[in-house]
Amino acid sequence: MNQQMEITETAQLEKLIDLKSEAYKLESAQELAIFACNSPHQLHRYFQAISWQRNKLNKIEIIAVSGVSMVEKNAPIVRFLIKLIKVALSFEKKNQPLLFTPEVIKKDNELKAQWDEFLPPYCQWLPYAKNDETEAGLIVFHEQPVTTDCHKLFVPLSETFEHVWYGFPENRKKQFGLIARFTRSSLQKVLLLAIIIAVLMIPVRESALAPASVVATKPIIVSSSITGVIKDIHVPPNDFVKKGDLLVSLDADKLASDLDIAKKELTSAKTELLIASQRSFNQEDARADVNLLQSKVDGAELNVQRAQSLLDRSRIYAEQDGLAIYTDKYEFLGQSVSIGQRIMLLADINAVEIDIYMPVGDTIDFNVNDEVLLFLNTDPAKPIKAKLRQTSYEPRNRDNGDYVFHMKAQFDSSEYKGRIGWAGTAKVYSSSKVSLFMYLFRRPISTARRFLGV
Image (cartoon, rainbow, N blue to C red):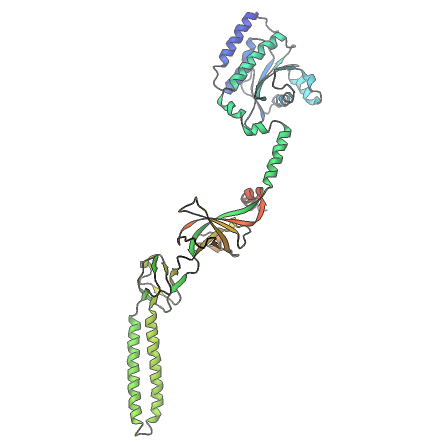
């Protein structure tokens, strides 16, 4: 390096004022870092200047080096400088401008040897401090001992750099960041880690979300007791009906014809029996025919009763007051139904519960009487309390292809009158507790295990 150039005190002060003025014109922290590393050369010659800062993760990083266009983060000298800055931040007067040499590094012989290898032995520590915290700064290395006059020139200039540095929006936000405040030292980092671990070990109730809907508690299945073709449905979908109302009519033409034939056969059998009975008074052989014709009459009467019963069953009536639940009348008209095939449901609108379809992947340890909160799509801000009434052990395949466990829950308030068909999301709480860590990361861990096959 060339010998330091001597300039008059007046010229130095003028140059100092110019540099301060230029610093206030800079528009970013990176521009200031480069300016701070190179511009002080105009005041006093030095070997190397380095600008550093704490990043958003509270890590020390070198952002500019005098005479270098780009900083290589993995270079040995950069790693050395980061270690040296950490040592300087441990000084009692770390927030004040200081002069020091490798002699201050007493316990780390390796770091001291690196200093002797990379840089000259005289160092100026010029921190940018605010609220007793150092967020950035400038380090200047000299080949000759730093004079008092030189130090007095650099200190006010670094104070200007400090003021400009904290004037940038990104540095104002970073200065008051919570992460940066709580991770200043190794002890603080250990304490923060211990707090995080303690929080993650807090026991909490496990819960899971699942689609849910309001359904009737014990609906009556309206089905056909005979095989036939639906001729008409007499109530609209989701209409309220009363006990005894006609719900469904089957095509009864053949049944009416069968009844008419059975009645005619009965009349004929009775006529034959009457004639045989009259003949039996005069003819002994006619008495034997009376018993046979009586059996024929009895059989004909049974046929009439059977035909009448089938005709009566072709008309289906409501067994109780309730809501007739089915989709569309015209999906059933003209369709053939077999014995026991469901046509609609007849539900009591005052007896409702919750149907829950819990995805297999979300299932946890649920038990009867576990707490349930129902968030209806019609009013999601007001959860409705319920208790789990029934759980299932075997999953079922829904129409969309998902495998779910079907569960039922009853409302806590017997006075609640939810509308049948309302849908929403049920949050089911398990009675057992797990750590907050498992509550937050159960799904990611399960997904990772399935992916890795362990």
